Image 1 (spheres, rainbow, N blue to C red):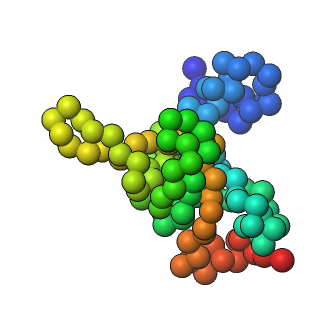
Image 2: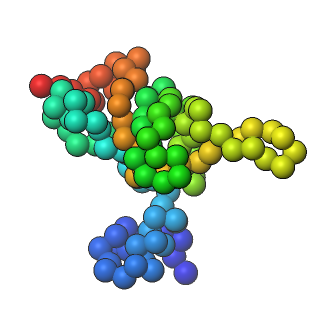
Amino acid sequence: MKEFSVAWKGSRKQRKQRKYIFNAPLHIKQKFMSSHLSKELRKKYGKRSIGLRKGDRVKVISGKFRKHEGKVENINLKKTYVFVSGLESMKKDGIKKLLALHPSNLMITELNLDDKLRQKMAGGK
């Protein structure tokens, strides 16, 4: 059985779509780690979405923690998760643990433009 094939992307079958997402190599999974920009940023940069980076400020737009804001602390490419500061759950032994969120449930409110390449990538009008 093939481990990964680009041909799965063209299929209508949900099973193959899921297989494409779960078995994708990291350079392709990087493309799944993008979120929508807020209306102000959308106007400023002329783009609808951009890839998430550590240090971006995001707002949760759906789920249990809706309307909470925080800074991106960590990104897990393998599992397609984003960890946001301030969103924690308590484990049974009392240790606080950052919650994992999917990038589709987040909206970027402020970009981290420390990197020159990111500034160039964001562009702007």
